[in-house]
Image (cartoon, rainbow, N blue to C red; front, top):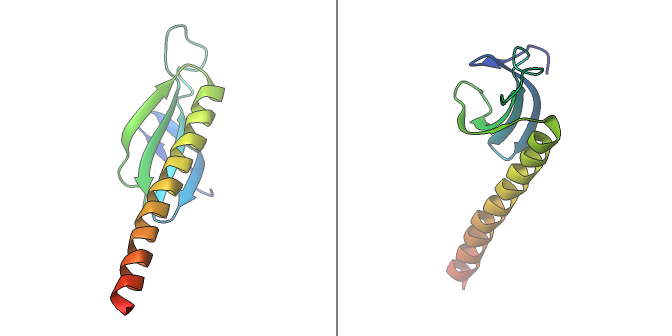
Length: 95
């Protein structure tokens, strides 16, 4: 990532692209060393990154990184189901 993207005080540090979906991990540097805060977040967005949704907030980086990967795999499974549906539909139409 060349340009740092920010959302509500969080700096986006990692991105995981799955088809047209993007899962990001953000860190709020003002909260990292504070007690009882959630300085890490994962969000779902699109390739433009102009809107972030479905935030999952964490106290530690490892939990946020695990969630980033889990959300990415959830998207892979989603797109697999969608693609299988379309592939099966096409095969049925060709008969």
